Length: 160
Image (cartoon, rainbow, N blue to C red):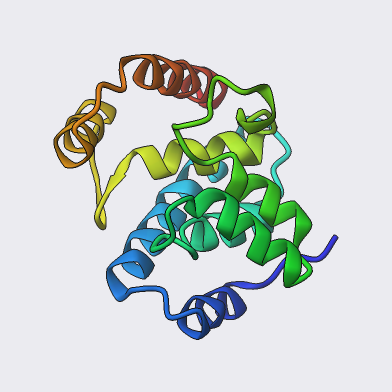
């Protein structure tokens, strides 16, 4: 398994000309994901934290593209990081009704959920994040909110 380290991830973002606000968002997602991963680990749940770090830092590497999940996954596959590409492909909301795009592993769920809790570079509630998405993209994500809420409940239950 080939997983880039934190410094390598940050360099990849810069080399890819990822906007600085997206990099700051990704760093905050990573910090939040690590807090969650540590809580879960303390409860005896095995987590590949290197994978969580890399995927959370790189999840929006292609954010400026129309389909940034697929474009990001394609880029990471091309760079030789297929496991990270898989997590990136599963961090979005638009395809959660398709089985191959649903987060299933604990690492996929952590990155997915952490991204949904970070608005810009601030950790917020799910409700605040989804309200912001509704305003920004003018769409109703009720089904996606419920899906994310279930992941939140699952992760909270496991970490208690």
